[in-house]
Length: 158
Length: 141
Image (cartoon, rainbow over all chains, first blue to last red; front, top):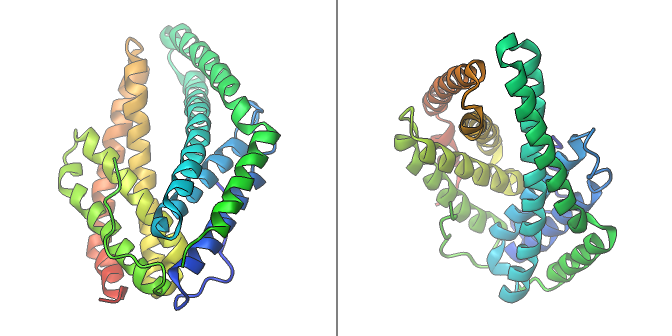
């Protein structure tokens, strides 16, 4: 999992609002940096990194809540949350499949068919979750969200 | 689990004081789940405590540098809690799917029990080492 990036320019004695703008800007860029290869179901790490980045962004938007215009923040947060939820649905399947494949390799013969069926079912769920995720990570939609977040940062109130 | 509202935040005042208010609230929130979560079968409280640990960790990732080594220690401790409670949660999510597959059910129950013991030991260890008291002490009044 990608470690949270240090946020340059933060100053403990500077106004909270200035920190809000800086932290949200950095956390937002982290989300978009991790968008390559998200729909690849063979390599599950990029999706995990992007999911964690959305969590960190949400955390920043929650921590600095009073610094943002209420309506603008609410709308942005709603969109970030929708993206995070779609990523989460796929991630849950990724994790379960990875675990079960490892488990099945060592499982008693009697349980192997049932485990294979369980994994097949999860693969189908994973495929559906990926389909539902696709529109959320389409380049145009991501750019729109990034633009919205830049505007939110600019609108930070002191 | 909805986050507890932080009162008294002021965008025009320094980051340090505002961050201290948030951290106190998030730390109280984490501690408030501990008694219940330390019961082996308390699925909901353990889930809530995982979310509370995650919230505290992410606030510390942004603002911890204002509060020195105690905050860095607390960040690591919150991450450890989140990780072990996350493992317990994964077992809870998988168990209903495992119905009828004996080896998997047995494994998940045993893993959950082991992780629960690890969680209980970790919480005691963190308290014993004064991790949370240290964070509290590092925050300005």
